[in-house]
Length: 51
Image 1 (spheres, rainbow, N blue to C red):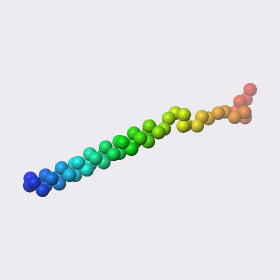
Image 2 (cartoon, helix red, strand yellow; image 1 turned 90 degrees about the horizontal axis):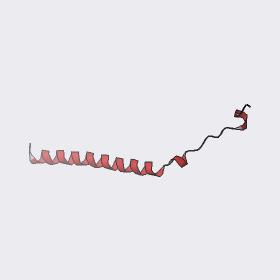
Image 3 (cartoon, rainbow, N blue to C red; image 1 turned 30 degrees about the horizontal axis):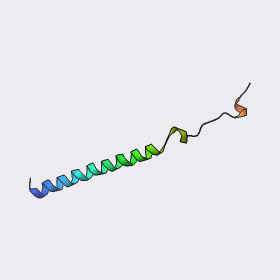
Image 4 (cartoon, rainbow, N blue to C red; image 1 turned 90 degrees about the vertical axis):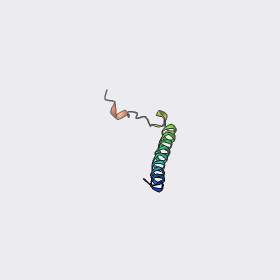
């Protein structure tokens, strides 16, 4: 392969790896911001208790 083709292939590979890393970082930050305390708890109403 010519040097230009090798450089282009390396550039495409580097861009794909960089995009994957950024995606993982964003997912990690979003997941770290959420916790079990953020989930609303469902409480039974008085109509649900038959007895």
